[in-house]
Length: 174
Image 1 (cartoon, rainbow, N blue to C red):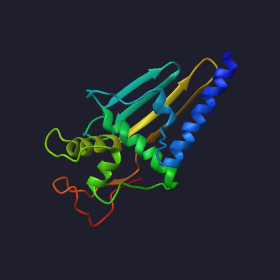
Image 2 (cartoon, one colour; image 1 turned 60 degrees about the vertical axis):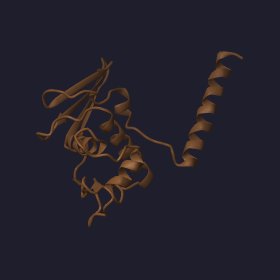
Image 3 (spheres, rainbow, N blue to C red; image 1 turned 180 degrees about the vertical axis):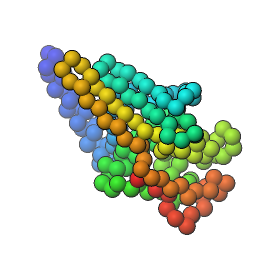
Image 4 (cartoon, rainbow, N blue to C red; image 1 turned 30 degrees about the vertical axis):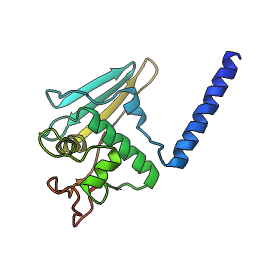
């Protein structure tokens, strides 16, 4: 088998895998910019974080005193938000009927306390949803950029002490 045949075979295998994931409802999406450069994995000092990948630069700015998002939870949230926006084709995303239901959808443990996933999720959601992103690409022939807030608005109506309780209003991100 030559290289062209191997490449074609790999493309076919990936297409089959993607179709199976789509049929099973497990196909996920992520913004292209966040596959080239991503969020910090550790707590950062200051209100801005910049990461470069070749000619591409991603900057994240904390718009509130809560600080910059970091770690796996903001990445998981961004993947969920992107996938849900593609799936629903809606500008406002509903985060589930309860905090427990949303955490189960994300694959997080529904544990409270100082180091529990409930506490970490709420903290990282505030950090992420109160952040702005700017992307910049520059090479010798082209210079472009875009800036946006992660969310224009968010409403979280969950009680971390009672994660299974149905709130009066739906928690949303828009």
